Length: 84
Image (cartoon, rainbow, N blue to C red; front, side, top):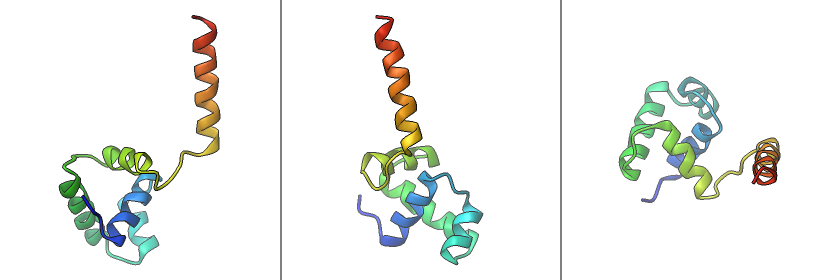
């Protein structure tokens, strides 16, 4: 389901690990407003947690994992393949 620009912005900040109060400060909105936006995102997408928001944000390609996470994944995959 389509998100408004503000909802998308909040979803991206959640995926980056920000807490509600941090999102509120960054976007110059109230903490209560952040909660309302998060509720709408969850409702539109039919999900129940912030983790699911983060997963979908990455899935849609709105943000990418940090390079360090990609390198760590490669290391783990290479170790797993060498033991096979």
